[in-house]
Image 1 (cartoon, rainbow, N blue to C red):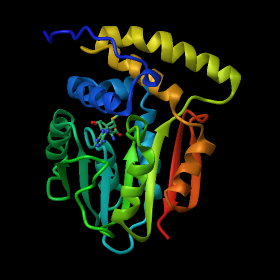
Image 2 (image 1 turned 45 degrees about the horizontal axis):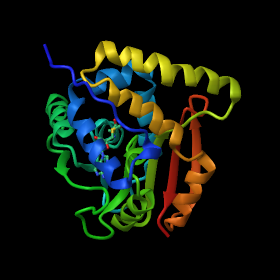
Image 3 (image 1 turned 135 degrees about the horizontal axis):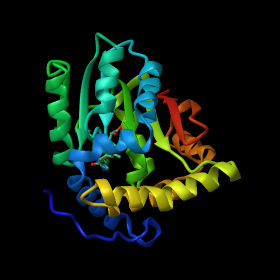
Length: 249
Ligand SMILES: C[S@@+](CC[C@H](N)C(=O)[O-])C[C@H]1O[C@@H](n2cnc3c(N)ncnc32)[C@H](O)[C@@H]1O
């Protein structure tokens, strides 16, 4: 039986950026074994469909390389290679425990010759400029306080006309949906997490971080401020999640 972690994390608005980074590292090192299961469960498997939509929108035309930033358990990396049969993928994350689960998945799917995982920080990507056709981040940017820097780094490492792709969860705009979502995020999710996760406080942070994430307009604007052009956004599942795509000029 795994030992339960009795933690309470401060609210996102009460933390300094450095505290948030430390907390994010600690939090993701405690939940990797159940991470995939809880993602599928809490999103009713929508997370799988969302990553597939992202993979479908990727365009490979030069280096045939994809970078999955904040790869976690490598789900976006796997979705990308399954959709695009010629590409090579690099997954990067700063939490080794998450990537260990990803590595098992890659071996299980016999994809070790197409996906490599490396430990690193999204703030300082260890790659030369113009390396990848596409750089993507799924459900990771919300956990990064300096989003502008992360986007600028992703833009730096893609080729000209390459894509920067972001998949992220949002607090829906519609008042009725908001009511339901509030109930779900702030009441149901934390209670379910108590049953299934060894670190239930991590799921309180999840709700809080979604509520604090900028609205779609603001986030699309941030991508433009990072120097990306032709920024498009797609609302998925009633606006609970958005897919953003920007292009390097
Ligand atoms: C919610 S998980 C998303 C994992 C995966 N992309 C997915 O689609 O399920 C967020 C991941 O972001 C990683 N992360 C957060 N900040 C990071 C940073 N600055 N550099 C690298 N990884 C980071 C965490 O370690 C965690 O694995």
